[in-house]
Amino acid sequence: MKLKKAIDRIPGGLMLVPLLLGACVHTFAPGGGKYLGSFTNGLITGTVPILAVWFFCMGATIDLRATGTVLRKSGTLLVTKMVVAWIATIVASHFIPIDGVKAGLFAGLSVLAITTSMDMTNGGLYAAVMQQYGSKEEAGAFVLMSIESGPLVSMIILGATGVAFFEPRLFVGAVLPFLIGFALGNLDSELREFFGRCVHPLIPFFGFALGNGIDLNVIVTSGLPGIVLGLGVIVVTGIPLILADRWIAGGNGAAGLAASSTAGGAGGNPASIGEMSPRCKPLGPAATAMVGRAGVG
Image 1 (cartoon, rainbow, N blue to C red):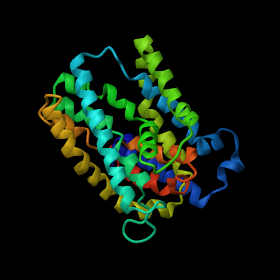
Image 2 (cartoon, rainbow, N blue to C red; image 1 turned 135 degrees about the vertical axis):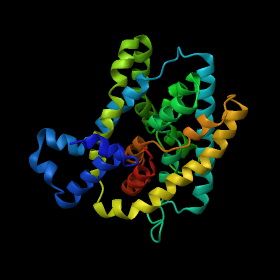
Image 3 (cartoon, rainbow, N blue to C red; image 1 turned 30 degrees about the horizontal axis):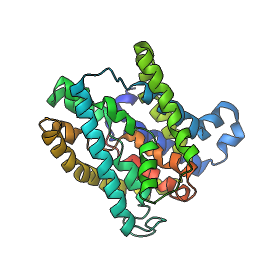
């Protein structure tokens, strides 16, 4: 059976399919993990440790020995996307209630969902587009954009805009695995390659664990809003990224367009942030489902 190929045909499938399976377990057998215990319970409830390992491995993929051209291009895209996400968060916070939209077509939409969908780029899609339409330097420009991975950038934006409050120690705790991975990856290229291979295989595992904290009804109701959110991210971040790529990074705009998507792994950030901010915790399940659906690969 070609299960992997079938999953890859689904936009964001590597995250969404395990998320859906986890939601089914949570909905129809909510006590299954506790009943079975041991390793099975660990897979079901291990969202935070699995995300920590994934964040560590993402840090290890960053290579500071990349050429100046690569660093300029990746830095331009990184800063542009962060600034756009910050502005979008400020605007959204003036129109969306602090506890999210409660009814209607966009029920479940929150500032948390918007921020976490905008500030993390789909590396796989970016690499695929750049290999076909970009230069070698543009293909390697994801080197610094890996900094977007994990909850750190979202925490900075949400904290700076007053949407959420985080104790300083929580910022340290959130970034430490990433920094350790980053240090090891730059000390030894073999370690960078070794840990880098773990990034994509870990996504289904934290997707399944995240799904086990979400009722299936939330997945169903978040489907259409999530798709609209994903399209909105492409439009809102795509235009500034294309302009920045052309005017600052010296590209033709293709890299900016490729960087305008939502990463499938971004679905893990609402839950991570919810663990650190009581205000965001109730918004986590709906935001996770919505951001996971907004991911395009």
